[in-house]
Image (tube, helix red, strand yellow):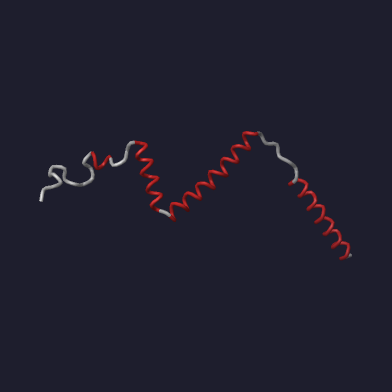
Length: 96
């Protein structure tokens, strides 16, 4: 009797494995837009991870990227030009 139960267990295990593999091997229907979106997402996540690692390993490069972005936006050294840097703008620089 226990041999029959063991045999039944292995048969059910094999049938379940076959059915599971059959379901996994069934191709999914995807459009080209779905494929492009998945590719773009995977590259953006990989790129973000690599950029974060590069910024951590090379902080000078991270600062240079920030300065370049500020220069493109026209915000580079705006605080110093507007007198908001904390220095006294009433006195000339060469007063001793």
